[in-house]
Length: 102
Length: 167
Image 1 (cartoon, rainbow over the protein chains, first blue to last red):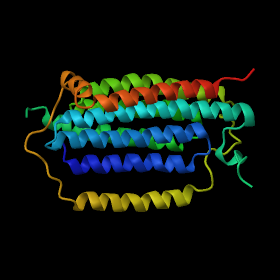
Image 2: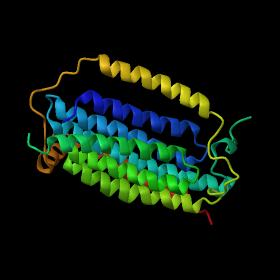
Image 3: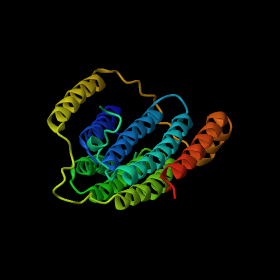
């Protein structure tokens, strides 16, 4: 087992990579992809802490299962919204979807 | 613990570097289809990292759900929404430099905080198996388990209704 600090620095960098992608991507599918990277970084943190803490490891793993299920729900609903917007607006770029902006 | 321990540590650092590299390519590459393929490699790397951290069941779920289901959904969405690989359309907005600055500042503060915090490491490394995980899911966490099942069901029905064409 490597020091927990190294694992935490790695997950921080992974999270920030996902954050950068979520902020800079124009395509909505690209933003969803970046959000998946961020969720994965958080899950690695959970598993890393479950290895070193006194709490039994099942608690963290159950939390990770919940996060993965919620990520699946997010991806399903998000991609359905992307498809609906593409059918109505003929675009998948976030700066071109400005119907609610005046 | 044995003679292979230095080799395993070296492989772990290499794996972490590889995950970071594929993640950076995922968020920066122009072609979105390539981004999806690199995301699959990132998720596979994270699954291997779970094996290193002795979370076998989570690694299996990661491969099954992320690499199997979510990647299929993403690639379907990319293929259904055309105009994505047109090289004349810019794929990132004009916030690239500010985003880089802000994520850099946040990263420096996060790393400083991580290095300054005294982490309390218990003497024995915790481990678990699928049997204990199933008992926890059906015993201590049965109410959140049922709620999350309902959330997933509602989300999937909502996704079908949203994506359905109206005619």
